[in-house]
Length: 422
Image (tube, one colour):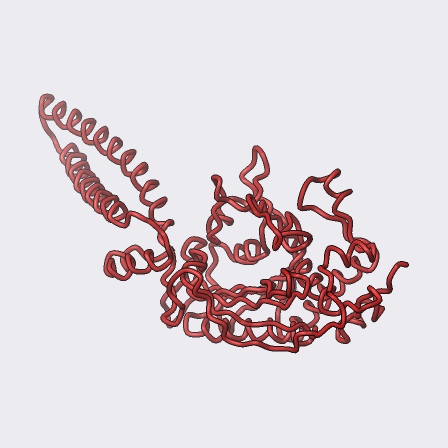
């Protein structure tokens, strides 16, 4: 979340930021609650001083009537302080709720508005077919790579079984990404698939209500994670870090998404599912390093999809589409020949610079010239298995109905071609 003093000192900037994100928030309510809190803190401080003076006055010699008066005065002060402290506690809780609703400030070069994402780069050669290309669902079923029907019976809609070569393909993509990140200096993790509510909330995911996109474990304070950003970001909760250099982490996890209301042609098959595997990049760094690290994460994502021979484009995400924690966000969209009537780009990665928005909630700091400062936190997708599998099946299909494996992936799969089953 943003520093409350910064909000008070920059109210017009905050209002413009909220409007540009397409949000409707009552910033005046936040200020009103903070004013009330300040008054209560001052009043409680004054009463505590009076109580201390009253206690000191009772140390000397005095007659019974004077002592009785001081005792009754002390009781009255104690009762009033307790009442005001209870009121302060409730007020502080309300203030925190409103405070958390205020999104991060976005970068000056973020496109403003709705549907305003800007294409920064287009890379790779879109394949040309001498036949009508199939979508991944048709390819995968004909090659016996996945089964949605049996998964629907066992687990429900938007779950799936990966089968045969698709199993090796997912594991190959994960190993390919992890090996590349290890060589780039990342520490590797397999993270828990569960996180406690205060961690989920600290990262900026809304864990409650109809807008929540993650699953709660009943009768607990725990949730299934929607991304390893949650578990990597929470790793150093309430810690002061030694940041001589940026701390880069890569985490493999399953990701669970409710995807409530997601439907339609572009959501079918593996594109929008309730569970998938993902390798996530994460970095804790000093404020002056976060822009550079963010650009490095984007370059790594581009390198991964270039190595996989998948055509893609890079988007600078507009203010309406930024999550609340994001200062700036880039998406990579891969070309998917079976998407729509003539092929479409579909999102496969994103990377966000969240500055110190998350670290304030999670109390993650570093020392700089003796001063305690909040770290900046950057996240990015290395590989989301399901959507990358879509791009591979659709871009490298052939007229026989088989699929070629990208050259840089063959040493991880152990095969270079998925043959037609007939």
